[in-house]
Length: 181
View 1 (cartoon, rainbow, N blue to C red):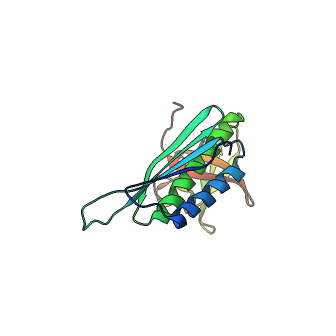
View 2 (view 1 turned 120 degrees about the horizontal axis):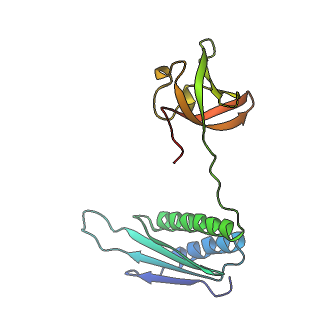
View 3 (view 1 turned 135 degrees about the horizontal axis):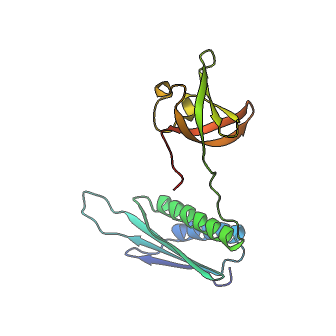
């Protein structure tokens, strides 16, 4: 990290143990993404009604080359849980930003369309054929919107293709006419 870690306590006395936990988590961020320029952690004790407990809120602001990221007000009654959750969230944001900086946007699989062509009662699975003639198997655990038993031969479906040990498999199968949007 180019600048020293900045830890602030609002509404509570600074705690060496909490500060050490925040420093440890920030050091892990720095090892994960060495180009990290700055990190500020704000730990606040929110004052609530006495019967609802006193939740801690954690905010983390980080500076990367060309980017400012923040996670705002992750809350929990345990300050260490709030810290953990906030640092997990900012790490995910840094991962996404780093991927974007490298030009590696997260790719989502393109759904295919097909028609249910047969069922194998012995193995409790079905088969979908696409317009190019490829067949994909699927089972009850691969259904997205309706139960497996509601499908019949000829039902038009949309699915995510995947290569499995057993061959081509259809995941997240959903029936109905799907249109490219």
